Image (tube, rainbow, N blue to C red):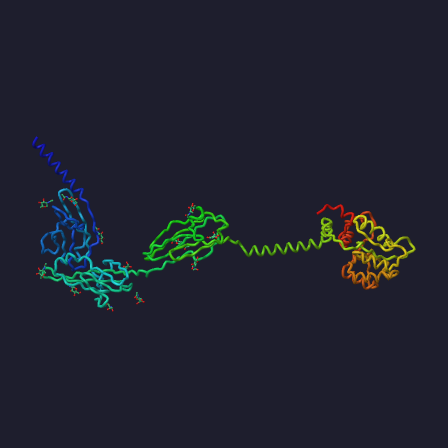
Length: 547
Ligand SMILES: *[C@@H]1O[C@H](CO)[C@@H](O)[C@H](O)[C@H]1NC(C)=O
Ligand SMILES: *[C@@H]1O[C@H](CO)[C@@H](O)[C@H](O)[C@H]1NC(C)=O
Ligand SMILES: *[C@@H]1O[C@H](CO)[C@@H](O)[C@H](O)[C@H]1NC(C)=O
Ligand SMILES: *[C@@H]1O[C@H](CO)[C@@H](O)[C@H](O)[C@H]1NC(C)=O
Ligand SMILES: *[C@@H]1O[C@H](CO)[C@@H](O)[C@H](O)[C@H]1NC(C)=O
Ligand SMILES: *[C@@H]1O[C@H](CO)[C@@H](O)[C@H](O)[C@H]1NC(C)=O
Ligand SMILES: *[C@@H]1O[C@H](CO)[C@@H](O)[C@H](O)[C@H]1NC(C)=O
Ligand SMILES: *[C@@H]1O[C@H](CO)[C@@H](O)[C@H](O)[C@H]1NC(C)=O
Ligand SMILES: *[C@@H]1O[C@H](CO)[C@@H](O)[C@H](O)[C@H]1NC(C)=O
Ligand SMILES: *[C@@H]1O[C@H](CO)[C@@H](O)[C@H](O)[C@H]1NC(C)=O
Ligand SMILES: *[C@@H]1O[C@H](CO)[C@@H](O)[C@H](O)[C@H]1NC(C)=O
Ligand SMILES: *[C@@H]1O[C@H](CO)[C@@H](O)[C@H](O)[C@H]1NC(C)=O
């Protein structure tokens, strides 16, 4: 039983110890470097908390060699620290320190590099301590990891070098382990070397640290500035969703309130949610504050065009306005011009070809309203050649006495005065002509080919005189009707030539068919066109509805 108990006990102990060993957590500390020939001291207790009742042991890793505690050794453990006095190139490698207490263990790895300076330089670019400082009136550069040597008291003052030259500038002052630079600027960036001597066991060693100093220019106190909008106008479609940034830059330490307003009222209050501002987003690029607040117009309405959406940032403000896009303005302009030219040409052509129909139609539809009383009795005075011929009635007679009255009087309702038909017998012709022409609105002159040869109206030359008077004194319009083509006007009186040249003549084709009595033939339309708008008789006026 005893044997069994002892065996069991020892198994438990072995088990316990194996558990202990395997649960020892490990940390790695990599960045330890030292210039060859200089002393190095490493403290295992990185976390400076007071430890009670523990064992601490340094090993060289790999072969797991225990570091000696003999003080005269070049590498030795002194209290909790590992000493190299001095370090040699072969010392590079990893070292571990194991801390035991009653309940747990800790293991820390140190990867130590012993380096040589680059030939001709006082440093090696791979082993520099970086330090960033702001450009200001007074900056401090620290010579790092000197504490353990300081504790030993046998150290010299620290000397500072820049780019391997001793600093002699009055702006550089050494104070304890620090270098103070007054009015530091970007040009003070560079490679710094701090160096002191350390006496150990009667021997003097150098201790140096290379520092890569970067002086960061901080921008001067920035004024608040709105980068966007810039009182500009943008094109947006009606009904679209528009997002506009208000981008503001300001000094880091100024907290500007940014808001979007219309008519000095916050957009969030004045648009019932249709227009909203987003949250302020801040960032700090290059030492200043950059803020963005968006304006979100969910749906652009007509009344938004021309409105000033103003972004306020502290003391400054800038607006953006919306404009409706004008697509292809030039195209529209040219198109519009072409269209109006086309319409004009078409209108002119229509008027040219349908002038007579238009006027006639217009008279027909509006005549009751446009006719005004002028005190005249006849619509036209008809003048025609009375050719005293032996053979039956001439074409002219037929036309004037039958056709004209049939069409113009009976069908169109005009009132004509035809000499020889309407004059009272016995009255002096010259008087009749003079009076009736004054009471007529038009003078119709009928020309027959046979009249040219024997002279127009030879037999009634008084009428010619009257016609002159009418033309010149009363300004009556004359309608010239040719009953057939008249080739030669040379024998015609000057007045006829003048009328023919000024107003032209209407030629009648000379047929008396049924169709030619229609008011809608080209000939009669032409005549009606030149006739005055028909005047209503007083009996007709009665029948009109009261307007
Ligand atoms: C042992 O060390 C660990 C961590 O280092 C600590 O938490 C614990 O309290 C220590 N135990 C004793 C008895 O000191
Ligand atoms: C530390 O080591 C000593 C001797 O090596 C030993 O007597 C002691 O018990 C150890 N202490 C702990 C806490 O491991
Ligand atoms: C130690 O550092 C060197 C270079 O600095 C690297 O090559 C090596 O892997 C490191 N060793 C460990 C154990 O981290
Ligand atoms: C610094 O030293 C270099 C040589 O290492 C020399 O060329 C240079 O002129 C020196 N600069 C100053 C400011 O002394
Ligand atoms: C840094 O040096 C350059 C060149 O010598 C000079 O032009 C510049 O003004 C200097 N900057 C400052 C802040 O002194
Ligand atoms: C400092 O150095 C001197 C002479 O080398 C030596 O006597 C003294 O003990 C040293 N002091 C310390 C604290 O090591
Ligand atoms: C210490 O550095 C100086 C140059 O700054 C050099 O002359 C001296 O030999 C160095 N001392 C040792 C022990 O390397
Ligand atoms: C020094 O630091 C600056 C900024 O961090 C870097 O650009 C530069 O390369 C460093 N110089 C060296 C020699 O490492
Ligand atoms: C405003 O700033 C943001 C963030 O930098 C950027 O994406 C946006 O283009 C800027 N807007 C304008 C209109 O410049
Ligand atoms: C702006 O406010 C004024 C009075 O405060 C008002 O008369 C005007 O109509 C408003 N304009 C718009 C666009 O709302
Ligand atoms: C703009 O507002 C509408 C409605 O509130 C919302 O749905 C949309 O996500 C907003 N857009 C942005 C970019 O904030
Ligand atoms: C833009 O307009 C605001 C008023 O809305 C004015 O205060 C500001 O000076 C203007 N900015 C520019 C660049 O015209």
